[in-house]
Structures are given as C-alpha cells and as structure tokens.
Image 1 (cartoon, helix red, strand yellow):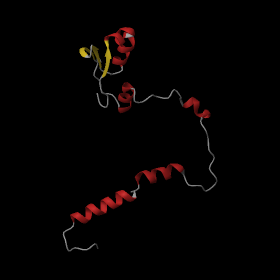
Image 2 (cartoon, one colour; image 1 turned 90 degrees about the vertical axis):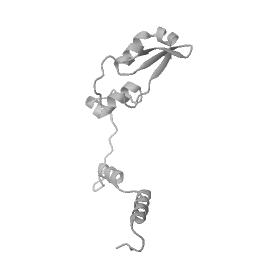
Image 3 (tube, one colour; image 1 turned 45 degrees about the horizontal axis):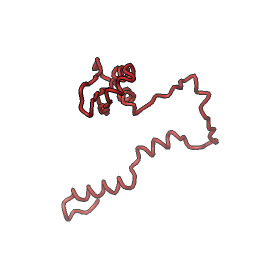
Image 4 (cartoon, helix red, strand yellow; image 1 turned 60 degrees about the horizontal axis):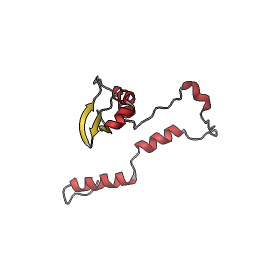
Length: 122
C-alpha cells in the first residue's frame, strides 16, 4: 500500500467494534492488533488490486471525498468577472508553471558551477 502505514489497535479496541475494523481492511487498510503492546495478529486486505492514488488516500483516511455532485453546482458560490478581466485559471496555470525567483537563482548557480573557468556567459 502506497502512502499508508499500518494502524495499530489493542485487542480491547478491536473487540468494541470488529465490524468497523473489517470495513477498514476491506478498504485496503492493514491493521495490527496488539495485547500489552505486542502484536498478536495482523488484519490485511483480502484482495490486493491496483488502486488509484485517490483510493489509497481515502483508505488511509488522509482524504475525505466530498458528498457533493454535479447536481449541487447551483449551490457553489459564483463570482462574475468584469469584462476584460484576465482568466483566473490561466493566471493560476501560469503561476504554477512559471519559474520562481529562488528556482531561477538556483538554476543559474548550478549552471555557473558546470561551466569551465574562464568562459563567460554569451
């Protein structure tokens, strides 16, 4: 399992709600069961099928999927942009893929170290 560590629970915790533990294992989580701090059993998923990164994160509990669907689009906040305003998506993509100052400085520093001494920048 990528990105998921094993969960450790005590025998007592396991005995309170074994159905929940089995459900977690069904989702791909591995659970170690301990008694007095010593692992006595390991509950592992029954089927090892290839899952997407999102499925892995959901199984780990690191991601919770929204219950909203496309039927809920009218409940989302809408912001009307003034005529001629730049496209927000385009601005975000440009920022994401543009080189930041520290990245540019680092690249130039590394390039300068690679050039033999005595050669100037063209």
